[in-house]
Image 1 (tube, protein in one colour):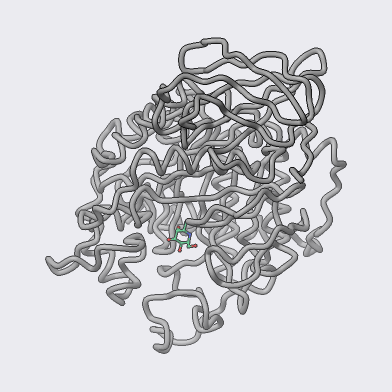
Image 2: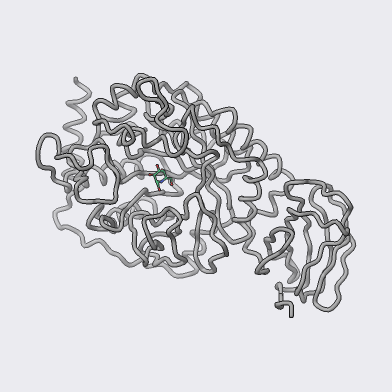
Length: 482
Ligand code: FHN
């Protein structure tokens, strides 16, 4: 009881602090030169590969309600909405099953590093509204319920493994009693279509809470590298829904180098063409965020000048489900990573830990398989940019500039040619050397009539993707074959 009184007093003080005497007109414009933006985005663009983590009260329910599977496919982090129960019913079932082990966070961070991830983005609060940090503006949080600050535990573990840290934060909230869910026909809510329990709501009060919680997250955990907002609808977005520009401005005041995605908005200017998770367009006004977020989808081509990140699950659900066995193959996962990098994007690959924080065995196996490939071939992903070729019949290509005006092309061969030659049609540049990353073997390389040909062994050393590093003189020049 004492804790809650203290929290209420603290919340009132904090709310008063947040409402500045002169309501600031949130600046929508970003005063940042291209050079400053490139410097701020540099680590993220070089990283190319991050681990997403969906973990919260839903994880302990594991896709099961009343002893039955809620489904075998799709996001079980939505279980409260899928079974359509109010927040109290949901919490009563879920809280007893959410029992984080003492060292869960270290397991995650170690797995991310072993997989070759350079950053981790984890759910500080998903749509169910339960906060993983020790909040002073909420009593639906790990501090109140578990007397732990799970965000701090995860941040400390991630930093100990040298990972950059990202906070996923849901602006949608199925717990807060002032969140006006009736204002959107497109956003989900377990009580959608029903009248607000306990009478009319004032969304502005929810926004004070949302801004207050975000303020705690960007004030109390050191440097936060990424803020991964989630998500808006075409009928409820931006300033109307979240006081988005003010929220982003407050975040930038506390975290000047932070990188934020485009999901406080759902408009063409923010890179969205529809409500579909693949409904993105290669367009982003920087005031709406720093990168666009194709979900469960890899763009068909690169998007020059646009920063983007594809987020994907290892099976079909973001939050843990004991019923979802549709695990993607190692080949699919590794080739997705390569395909995305060859188009100049980042890959945010999700794990959904169980209620105790442990990682499903299948996820560990997948992440270790990627890590084994990255151990040999990581230089062909990290710090690279998109392929200079429109299409290659046998695989993908990434590139990295080298000293002395050379460029290194990384040729990721999926379909190993049977005639012992690998051809790069249309490449005009003079080749300098070719080396197989798997065993550092030098390969004979010739050029004739704007075609570069590399002599390769009969068998592919790596059936999933063998990488050949080809150094060429100058910047790549490719002409369309006649
Ligand atoms: O509704 C969420 C979903 O649960 C999950 O968090 C994904 C991850 O990008 N985002 C939303 C759906 O787009």
